[in-house]
Length: 167
Image 1 (cartoon, rainbow, N blue to C red):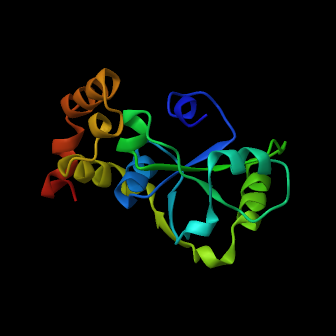
Image 2: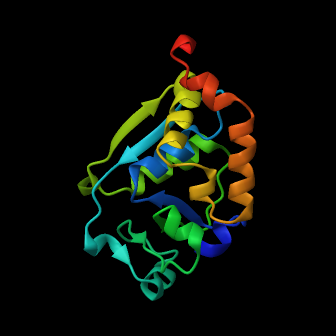
């Protein structure tokens, strides 16, 4: 499921990362978004991590919220420092109901803190991340990521957004 998720197949997995710069990259990726991004930071302890067999057998039961750390069988999983949470099949009529349910599932010991990123900073942050090597090319190793990076670089957005006169 982790591999399929990273190649666009909808699954019950929710993507997380152990790298805050990767989280920030995906939070600001869509520079034309009309909504702010939220990046979460928390502490996960070993006892909160399921192995694959335990995760699949626990689906559908009301148990403490746990994370799934996949074996990195794919370059994307590794490049994105991927980890996941596995969710039961639950129908929600709206996005707010889903997020309310999700927030109720998170254990308090994660000590989650939230960083809100206003949309007006998306382009600048994305350009700066690109400058330090966090780009489509590094997040999506292979021809697709390379081509997307080249399109982004040749769009002129990076130079415009990093120009001090822009601010």
